[in-house]
Length: 177
Ligand code: NI
Picture (cartoon, rainbow, N blue to C red):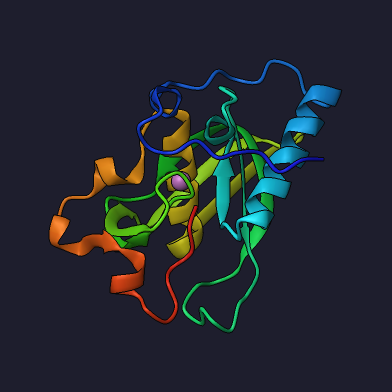
């Protein structure tokens, strides 16, 4: 379909709450998903939320193939998740580096729930219901935040671990979402 421009931090549209998708398996929805996949792949992102391309709907895409450059980043299945609901499984939090296609050139350490269940729908209206942990859980929380108008710098607690990617990680930066 098309590679879209990704809105950057400072654009008020990134701070809005997205609306639920009311109808599945429509031409418009499939076109939106195709644009999001194309845009995410073009930018080598791990995930993308519809508000990042200026569409205020509860649609996110994410997925990470195993990459030898990132041996610690576990593979995450290619997923389109619509109208998601998240339920933390336990109170354990984990800290790790995050980046965002809407905050290019920066990385920061963000606390996230270590384990969670997420529920939602694929573009055809089929139910998705998964319990996940680690990087997979982190990516879902990051993308979900985009649907409620939250960017990861708003969750950084320790700003001594927030900075320019090329300074922090001259060799292999963590993926952007
Ligand atoms: Ni992001």
